[in-house]
Image (cartoon, rainbow, N blue to C red; front, side, top):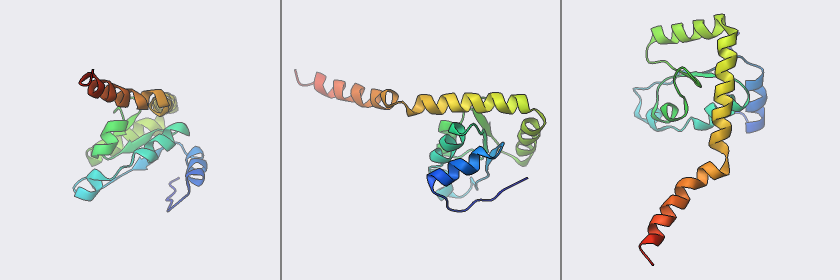
Length: 130
């Protein structure tokens, strides 16, 4: 069953995602505005809900989906078919991918991980001012 959802609050989106087995993000990668659109919250939301994502390979999605581990990036119609068939027919693979995606999203969400680059930059700046 496929469900199309429009604009939802974050809470509504999480509830919807938790009721599904897969999140699909088929985006027009030839459209420059889609290449720069940040779909990261969609992937992290699905990951935290235990739902793996199959998506078009946009710049933002290639940064948050580890292809074959935390989700799939489908470049061609054939890859979409292959990835979807694999995840639908093999629920154990889908569940494993969902778990890996959830762990990756939780790791990315830790404040310490987000602050590390900021602290490193500040240390570099302060090193120039003894």
